[in-house]
Image: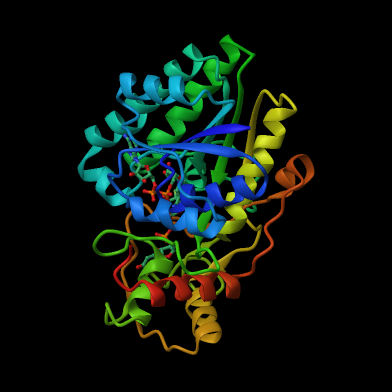
Length: 337
Ligand code: NAD
Ligand code: UFG
């Protein structure tokens, strides 16, 4: 299939393009580069041995630009990664988050249907479960209260897409709820490239390891978890990328509206991750316990059985692989792209 990949220059998008090519698909990327570098796409091209990845510097809020992309590159499906994703920033800039993520997606959905491209995979998030009602989290777990505008945009966009599918069942829409994507391509050529101080655990750890930060702050050690620190379901970004290929196969089977958790099903605490990183790299990570971070939940990990059953997809990489590959990327690219 030919796939429009919005946000394809970003962390998850760039890894997904590689897996799409490996599975025999073709892509065209639309990204405004507000949180990414065109170098990522050059490196993807190197990895998959093609001269270049078809790319438009386009904003998903720009109807004319999207129309041009789809006129020049008619597509069978869209994988929609484009969006702003910093939880903390979304609290201070709610309008910017709603405008970018919601208005942008509304424009995209309209242009897609005008071009007869009614097959869509959407990057949703485990954040829609809020403080989860059940652990491990199945897709039947009710959605919860999102404590920040970023999470609200994911939850609202899911609702919008469900309504679109109800009104026009010729759409095939797969909502993928990612747990905690980490790691990097094993080549070390592409990876996560946060601006400024990393918000997320793994990039913070790798920046401590490379000497950019003095120590890790552990946000709370008094949660109701085995060691008191927060428990999450970390998933290697290459496994996550392959989940999109599996979701495309479901679209080819005319799946209608479907929701899948993409996680490993295993929960690791902050200190488990620190120790796994130390074990797999041999580097000591100094840390200090700080107060809890507002909005964090104690425990979040998936039941990934539905994706295994229906998409024939399961995560293959373990936590040591995630640490090794995140470190390989950081070491080779201490300043990012
Ligand atoms: P990322 O920031 O690396 O990639 C997002 C890409 O979208 C960037 O390249 C950015 O330039 C682009 N973009 C943003 N707004 C745009 C716009 N208006 N028009 C065109 N391009 C635009 O983030 P990522 O980690 O690769 O995440 C991809 C998607 O997955 C996002 O929707 C994110 O919310 C979602 N997600 C990420 C995580 C995570 O922990 N990384 C977890 C759950 C869900
Ligand atoms: N943590 C620290 N110190 C840090 C960073 C994080 O102790 O410097 C802790 C957090 O308190 C949490 C765990 O490490 O217990 C993971 O935190 P992350 O920020 O890496 O990830 P979150 O689970 O908070 O959120 C991430 C994304 C969200 C997404 C969610 C579910 O940032 O966008 O996963 O997919 F919604």
